[in-house]
Image 1 (cartoon, rainbow, N blue to C red):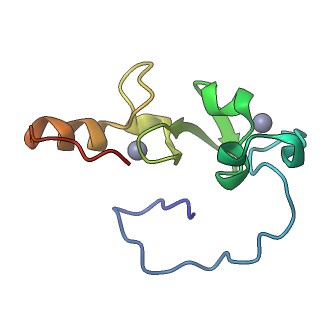
Image 2: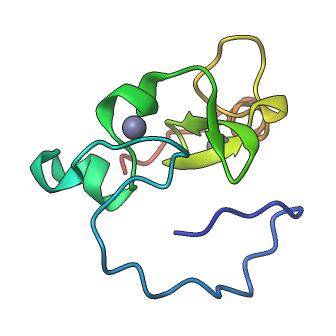
Length: 100
Ligand SMILES: [Zn+2]
Ligand SMILES: [Zn+2]
């Protein structure tokens, strides 16, 4: 997955070679090889997936449970775990949410 700092562009992905198992969180030394597949896949340890603010590439970010990736904390409301964009999208379309 990529950490996009743009406005939803998802064209470029220059990081493809993530062979090593490790968190992308700055200063995190968790060994993800022992983590759950979910956390391994998203390169975040359980602890940081729940942290309200972690430092990645020098930026404060939070793990979004809806997108399963990190966003800047400014994209979240207060202590929400889902980004504002995602929540807004949910409100707009009040249809059945496909299980995913
Ligand atoms: Zn961590
Ligand atoms: Zn999100």
